[in-house]
Image 1: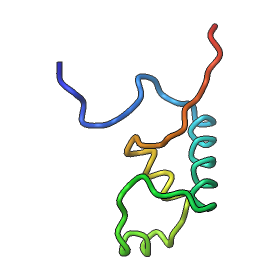
Image 2 (image 1 turned 120 degrees about the vertical axis):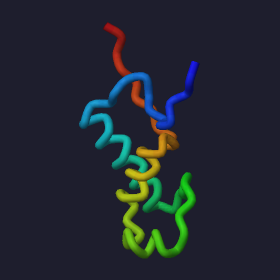
Image 3 (image 1 turned 180 degrees about the horizontal axis):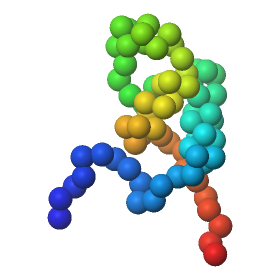
Length: 73
């Protein structure tokens, strides 16, 4: 069995779940939480130290430490 190159969940998040996860992580970052991805000074300056952009990059790389609980139907 081959592993896929991207790190994505077995299901897709809704746009509301994605917005909630990224917003929550951006708040954590703005309050001083450490980055979970490697960013050099040039990249940080390019994105203007924007916590939402950093949270989006963490989401895209699959390292966001936030999960979604869905009710079982």
